[in-house]
Image (cartoon, rainbow, N blue to C red; front, side, top):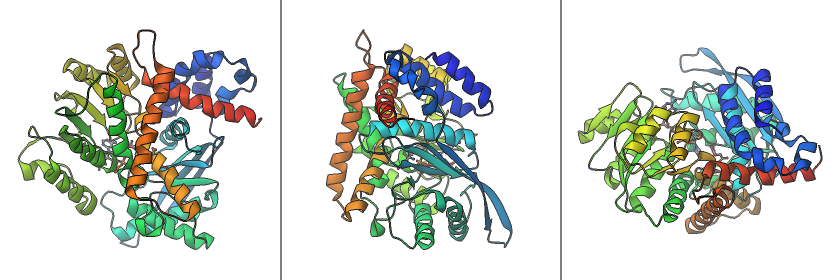
Length: 444
Ligand code: NDP
Ligand code: 2IT
């Protein structure tokens, strides 16, 4: 297999899908050497079969807004690969959603889910519907209309959706409710459900906590820990909030958080009390992060600015794809940043990743460090299957063990001759090997 050739072919076939091609390019180049040690992989044309999703559903969603106006949005579900388990992955509601973005996310999810050690294939779905500014009733009607179409493609042993950007407990609840009506069955077809109807304790916390558990493992390889370290966090949604909570618990200092309008910089640190305000602001009031700067009288930079030019020891990008470019990565490194643990999916551009690797700082790609969310989704599926629920402590212990395991696997496959751990290579190769072997065993 020649990565360049495969990539050129995909570029010719899918020329209008830049995010998808970006994600594929990174994986192809990092698995090329390992892949070519196995001629049997090429015989089965595993590389192409792994890059192209099993199937893609695309549909129109009609719903009625509060003024009685009929609105239309696009809906999608990408079932990327089910070699090691049912398709599994989140649903994103955001105005930017398109086929390219969901295909990149479903592709990444396949490797991420493989890394979790749990039996889950990869998928992703969503809509260009924007929940921003919509009433609760509108959100409910949209979720119901979306599931009217999506419902026929999913199932507890087929494809199990969950949350992502713009989709949290409220949206999962509405989607689950509609799905239950359509099928007349109570099954674990969605994860991230409410605690009263089959949700798992620690699922809301899981992605953010996992990002920090992974960071702890990386720091430990250098004999370091989080105590006293300053941390940049981007985003102020689910992942960012719980990453911040865990950083505080471990003695770190969170300096920044953001939303798509801009970021706040609090030199005194966002402490527990201020973080509780952010939880309230974002999850209940559904307000903007600028309100924090007004309340605590700290710096706010608008116009969609990112926090990376401020000085900190550690960066946790937890908002969205391509939110950290090469130039910003260089500023982080010049300012003495020692570690970047990604909470979002593909937040660093290829140029930014190159800067991190060239400077040999601790850098983990999202598919490794944000795998805690889907891992606890996998644990939610197990609990639903056995019709039991585990304690928060048990789920958290399992989450912690899974993040350690993923870290170990990255070290195993990503350690270079000079001892530097390339977590990008480690995660891609480790994730790939399991899926590849499963696909080979199952024939074409
Ligand atoms: P939320 O919707 O809860 O929060 C998203 C945050 O990112 C918000 O602060 C949002 O700001 C900001 N954001 C979203 N889009 C953009 C954009 N285009 N530019 C700038 N800021 C943006 O989502 P999550 O916290 O769940 O997801 C964050 C990231 O983590 C995503 O990349 C997601 O794929 C990834 N992830 C999520 C998991 C989960 O379990 N939820 C699991 C693994 C990864 P605003 O409110 O202004 O839009
Ligand atoms: O990107 C992700 O891993 C998620 N949004 C979580 C997926 C899941 O099925 O819990």
